[in-house]
Amino acid sequence: MRLYPEQLSKHLQAGLAPCYFIYGDEPLLRQEALDQLRRAARAQGFDERYRFDADDGPDWDAIFDASQSMSLFSSRQIIELALPEKLDKTASDRLRELLAQSHSDLLLLISGPRLNQQQQKTAWYKALAAAGPVIPVFTPDARHLARWLELRLRQHQLAAEPDALHWLTLAFEGNLLAAAGEIEKLALLNLPQPLTLPALQQHVQPHYHFNPFQLLDPLLQGKVKRGCRILQQLRQEGVEAGMLCYLLTKELNTLQSLHAALAGGQSFQQAAAALHVWSSRQPLMQAALNRLKGPKITALSRMLAAADAAMAGFDDDSAWRWLQALCVGFFDDKEPVILP
Image (cartoon, rainbow, N blue to C red; front, side, top):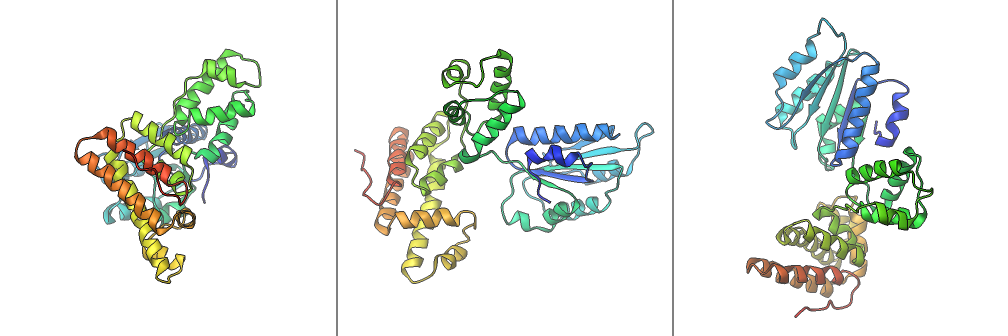
């Protein structure tokens, strides 16, 4: 059963499941979900808690010892387990063994990193999904962030005018932790409601944050302004141009391979499957191919090669200029502007 963070409160009204798996890369949503589950567990008599981190690999013997021991002072206990990035066969087997031993006086709170589609097909993930709710905690993208902010404001008896809410989405994209803190501050100021854009600009400090992977989708969609804004912020945050060159090279190579396959008579579905393009990314790739023809993709690849060469020559400024021109070049099938 998949359960989203905003659904957790209603779910807990019916009682606790024996196991919860919280996975994803959004620290605020992960921490809030864990805190909510801990509070619900304490209210139901789970007074003893053991925590096991995955920094050096789970100590399975210690985990099983804890799961089978009962304190004189508590008859119900929580075991929190943070999974590593990858689980080998031994860890997978031990995890499934632990899940099989679950009982009403033991609550398992298991957390993990963001999982790809292949990991969600593994035996250990399926065992977790069968044992209790799985709760994905991902940073809302630009389309869903406004809704998240609106709900967060409402929790603090606040509201914002449409243009003010839009400004908040730009000011805190990718940084929910900072957004939550600023909203808490706003609740203490007793400002007139609904909040206006001038009021927010006066009292709120923007704290947006992007990761390199967030640059890719806007470019494939032809959203140049957004792509350039993300690129500029990534540079300000200290992201290496070389990392972006690597990610963009993979993306352009995939586009070139798809274009060649289509030109050779394959269907898009056949070509995407052969190149192992995730189903969630196939619409983006198809949209990009509809907009960008073969010569344009080749031109973009040459620009990327120029950025990579500038990096090799320790000319960071030129590399970033090439990357910006590359972002603009994704707009349509016109020839990209060549920088001097």
